[in-house]
Length: 415
Image (cartoon, rainbow, N blue to C red; front, side, top):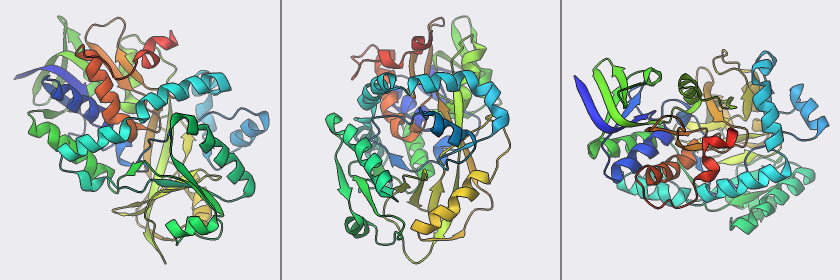
């Protein structure tokens, strides 16, 4: 049996869901191909739950020699290095270091702001249509500081976003406790970003977006998306249920997107930042919004399952065995600030963040393959950017006027 549609979307994370819904809203028939047959089961499941409308500047590679050495020796808790992975990542990390210089960083900030500035509006719209508005919370999130040096640096970073219209409030210890009374003495102040939305259950939000897609005539097919082929100008994936065929295909496979791009001859400086999370029972208090420990580099978010501690970046090969080292290192710091009780998960959850050196996604058509489109490499912002990058992609694919210039996200920038 052959299922024929206008477009096949490969991947059912927030990025794939965003593309599928946006194309569907513009009159395209769409099938999502996903190996799990469900939404938000990989990287989209394990995030901090923040729609980061304040995220102007991307996470950058350390620039100073001392900072690089400290990170390489695993003395910076914001990252963890699996040294055996470094030879295979060296070229991409070198380009990441270059892209973290002030000039390229500023250009990435302008391009990223064009997307994140619309992220909250787009999520609100999709969530309302999906009947999932209750899964998006007001109240923003907090960046907490442990020291005067950290506070000075963190406030300076916040000030950099002011020209882009990002609202925030500086907090002393009293103001911080007024918002989050359960924070411990190690937190001396912070910055409250007031506009972002948060979700207590990313998986439920993804399921609601998928249900909206299905209710509008879409279908999700369980199959290996890496089996995508082109035959006679049509894009095809063989599934256990039969052949899925479309005039166009969108690659939105997150950390697995590069493997498919390479299958068709596209070489990108792609790499993965891995990350872990663990849930904890609240102890002696609770949180009402996510709080970042700025100087230690992890976030604790109140989730439906408990308090979720999400680590910073682990630099490792995508399929390296999970390691508890990063989470185990961070947990004692977290207990100084947050009301963490016992662990609720049998083992840390592992996710993979798909990255390019400039920390911008690829959104656009493959240069040498008509009808093949890319929508991936959203780094730490897959939840944030899924619906809005899907809108931009759909506008370009259908010939509509794009809400922002798509040129900064073209894959040809790495030619």
